[in-house]
Length: 296
Image: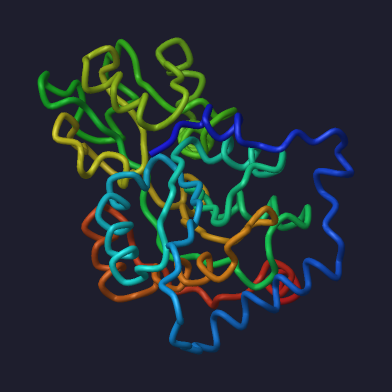
């Protein structure tokens, strides 16, 4: 497991914005066609010499950490020629690292919109974007102390010392939590009580330690934490849908392995594991951004 700081040390220094984003059209097309070949064709050739496992580098949102502790070993067991290197962090931070040229094969943010933003800049390999799961936004409290409220409706009347949310500038969960507070007209009322944390794990820590009475995170963040209890779900129409996406990005070196991993997430066994960790199934036509825009 690697930290966000470790990825920066491995990132190739890029001198200009044009050089960061420039990928020859022909090269990008060839990479996209290669990926599509991975999705549609399986060709097995007996190797004359056993090859060393290749590495697939994955950048994943913090809220995937608990589920991936089980999923990644299963993937490696099914693909003995692949080793997985995973870097966890806030989705917005990971996205910025990818823009700057971080050596990543697969990007898994907690909001598919982060992939769409990269796709608009030409930094996603065509045909690789998928939505594979969703989740809900929940109100949480610690297990050690009595919760000051029982539901999201009580936020309007209860006396609260502090409520922790992710920083909207650095985390997707913070952006969605801020949307909920604004939609519910609680942003002004709770302005002095809101404590911002860098990411969802930091929100969980503040609540578990009693430094904040309440917190707002994704269900996927809270469901496996024994020091946290979920009090209530935020209404679905109070924020944008929370859809987890995956894509191979422009810095990918192991496109074949990236395709194998993206396909693996759709297996029934893996979808069941995701549901055990607070994810919801998503039935979405698997099309690219441009196709979806054309249909609007």
